[in-house]
Image 1: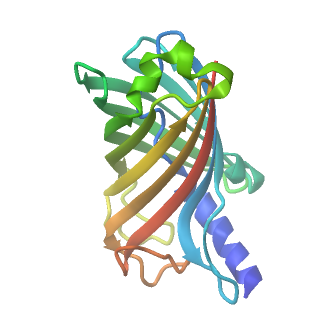
Image 2 (image 1 turned 60 degrees about the vertical axis):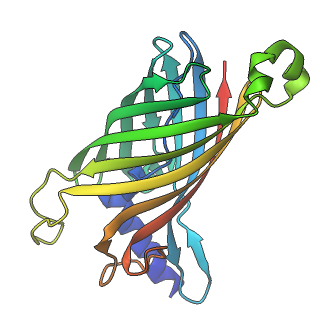
Length: 240
């Protein structure tokens, strides 16, 4: 039973579901600021005779603040590479709006993911569009940064909610079936626990919450029952 699960996991990696990762830089970086992010997590599945758990996909992301409003970033999906899938993603996050005191904000992300199976020579490309609203709390701590962040004490933390869309450009699935879901929606809620240079990210995501998750290779666990899947993610960010 466990070997069957591993085979199914490889199949999922090949079609690129690992690209359903956490949000990238919901609040844009400052101008000329850089960051490295390591993320792990994925859709929740039931492993026969074991337990329900998130698939442990992982990725490494680099971000650069082109300006105070625009952050460019690129990702390499490390778990996919283990199974012979060269998967990378890139995008740009733009700060659309900030409140006068900068406690509230809205950002948008336009990006893409690509996956190349080095064994089967298959190539996939998915555009992606996300939008997020975020709220900073403990903001006073950030305004008094020199006093309150000395020796790694916390800065203002961040709560966010968002909606994303993933676009499947190919008209047929792997076995010649017609592609029904051209647009794959995603809803997420997350939290950034911030220090001066470090951020601990946690996120829960509803992936394809309106599409049936029955009669497919994995037994997905979803907050919406027999629709879509629920992803759980943990990340660590280092700014410099």
